[in-house]
Length: 160
Image (cartoon, rainbow, N blue to C red; front, side):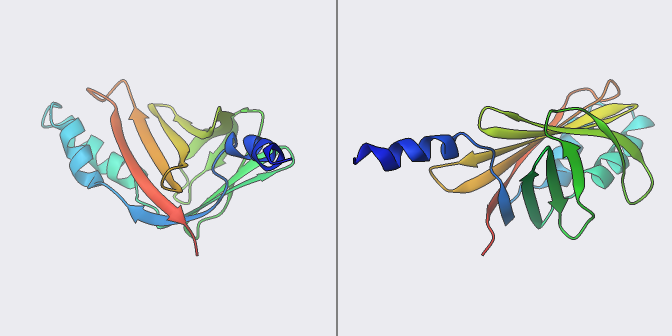
């Protein structure tokens, strides 16, 4: 019967990193944005930098939940974002009124959230690192207006 606890743990290991997480470490996101926009011309570069800084804050806390039929993601003290668990995109408005289509789905062990706007897309991949018991949030921002994607990873630890 020693194999039973191991077998019971298998389904849990293949789940998205649900729970409440707090910031452990983050890269210098403004420097990442600066590097990604450096090849742009002097007219479009400040516009792109400003927009990217606005849409890429480093959150201090993230709560990832799964309810029947939906994923709920809460960043800091902002209103929860509710998305169907089947990956369908739904309309959502940020606090400043900007509108997006947002979706969430699982991909193997990861939870993948996507924001789609008229001029670009942001993908958040939440991945549990079983060795360190931390969660990595890898952000990828793409747009036809950017010379290359903006990519960075933030590490979160379980909230105490």
